Length: 192
Image 1 (cartoon, rainbow, N blue to C red):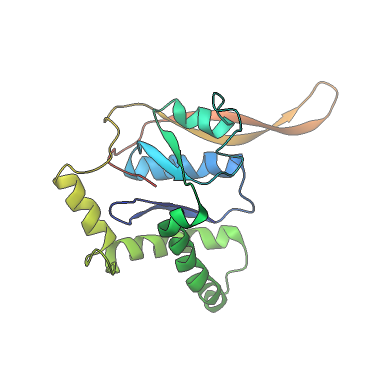
Image 2 (cartoon, one colour):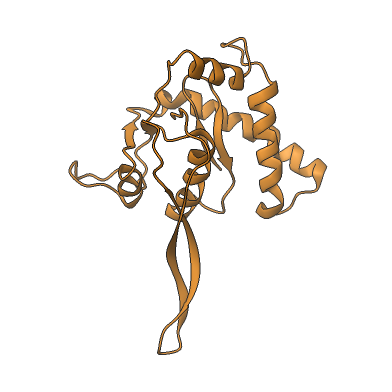
């Protein structure tokens, strides 16, 4: 499961289950979060090979993709440093197994709309214990008071990646990445 959590408001800007954590999962996940909540200035990550290379001058493929939009990675020095995000994983681990069993959800395609509904419900209706308000109210207040880590609002297109079947002249089949440009409907703040 991939989660993106705004540090200030605790809004889940994105949540989705994938078969595995890999580049294509992130290239699918991040544009959805960015289209709804805007481009973050940075994303707080661990030292997973999708985010980090041992060469300080090099970027991973994902790092190159987000760097194009002016987004950088900030690396957590320890696993404990990502406590807010780890607690958000606990939120899902605690709720999803029982929920999926009660709703008879057995595959990822069935799960996706339920996860989005649960994410929106949590953002809009559940009071955060530290903030004493819902994450959505905290988000809206931060925007209103202009105290958010917002990237400059521009009309940059986001790149959505999808797979296209390919066929070679030798008769072999495979998949290739293709890019589709789309203009985001809304820009505001988001940080992980």
